[in-house]
Amino acid sequence: MVMERYGSTGGMTLDIVGGIATFAVSWLLFIAMLAPFVADMMLVVYRDMRFSFKLLASLVKEMEYLKAAPISTDEVQAAYITAGYLVVIAALFALVRTWASWANLALWNPTQIVLNPVNTTNNGKSSKKGAGGVKYEALALEDGTISVEDKSTVKLNETPTMRYQALRVAVVILGLVILPAIAVAVRSVCSPLVAYAALNVTLNELLLHKFEPAPIEVDLTNLIGNKPWVEKFIHKSEKHERFGDDTMFRRTTGFSGDLAFNVSIDNDNPPNVLLIGVESFRYRDSRYLVGEEDPSNLFKGTNLTITPNFDRWAKRGVAMRNIWSSIPTSRSLESALFAQVPYHSNTQSGVTGGKTETKLSGLPQLFSEKGYETYFTTGSTLEFDNWNIFLPSHGFDYVWDARKMKRMAQQSLNISREDWDGIEHRGFGWGVHDDLSFKLLGDFLLKRRAQQIQKTAQGEPKMPMFITHYTITSHEPYKSWPRWYQESAKPDFSAMYEGEQHADRIERYMKARYFTDMELGKFMDRMEKEGFLNDTIVVIFGDHGQAPEIDNSNLHEES
Image (cartoon, rainbow, N blue to C red; front, side, top):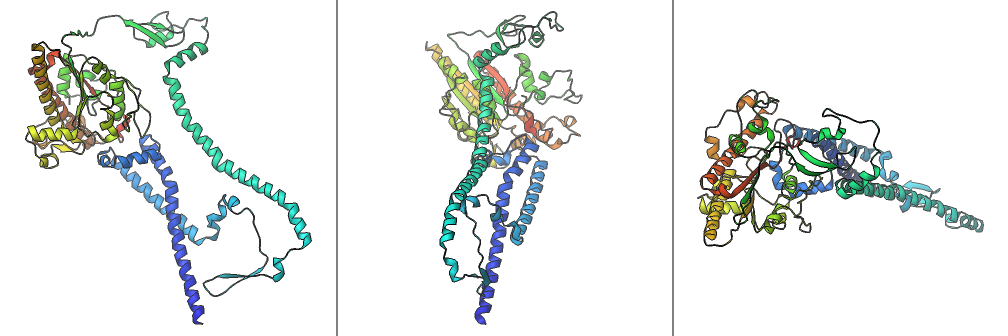
């Protein structure tokens, strides 16, 4: 009686442990299976992106930058709600798996066709004995024997059974392995092939001439007279030769009209060239670029501008209003410096990983061939997307990042270690604020120019500089700037954001934008006063645009 009771308790314990294990494993596997699909759905709805494990690996790699990622409150709330639904549904699924015998997924597993090729039935009697529910099968002695007649029957049926089993295995492998693999392979190959065909000028020209329709008898005219309709979309100042009657594909041979600007180069005194990429700087921020008429009422009927210094210098130079910079900065870097069409991927850019094996020919290489020293300077960290590997391996002789800027500031500007993350807020998660980076850059440029003048006076050839400098303070989420700026007087931009859906975010953006513009103005005024601009070409552009006015600010890339 004691043994029977002990056996019953042990069987119950095994049942409980087995149920808990079934529930836990089922719950985890359900979440693991559905989480990628749920994440994909969320990304499509909120970010126009698709989930991939490369994206997950990229997020893990850049974990330290996620705290500064542009994620709205609505997106976070939607993620929590969706995750809650997923957890609850997974729990319901696990409960069904634990308690319902028909939910034994092993019975639905197609691999059982391979693992258990022969289904055997047992006609013997079975009975449960007391020790933990262990089953004992009762077999008759004669069940282990087989007659001569039965042997011949087995031999006759053996070949058809093996063929049938082989067919079943082949169907499973074809449906579960081969066809999905082919679909994935075709999907992976198509996008690169289409992109290659679209960007291959030689191939396009060949296909254009081969498949262009024959000229039609009726003349297609437009508003500018009896000219082919495609001329409507080509600026009248452009001289060109079209490659067909019904195509815009053409060879530009020159331009006519008034000359906008001209740059004369003295071979004995080549100019320094300075490119300044302003973080998140967009066309609509500049009153000068938008125009005083403000046709879209971007400035809400006011005479305000959040970039007065840029506007002031743009009026003195040549302003180009038709420019596009892709987001994020890594993609615009490809275009601005190397004239590359940005690499289309949600998880990578053309610089990800450093691309040390990729040979590029762009501005750094061009100026190096002309005898220039090439510099890349920024107050930002460069580990993101492996800029710290890409830049020195693709034409830049010297690369300054946040670490170098901090060391220089501590040595020459009396900045202490505590000032970076302390109450002075001289730095933040992305690096060193723009006031210090512009100050350090200006000190260096003036020192190098003095050396250039000295060498020239001694009859030695001038060593010109090509410098690319990127700002960082106006990076999203626009929550950090130096303490002195926070306490200083600033224009009231409330008329431009009051009543907007994301008024607080727009206000922060304008504060950050005005700060960077103010420091840009100080830098340019200093360079002019010291004579550095007398033999320097300066180009100012936005690394990309952003839109704090909408839920997902990354959807507006215009710079």
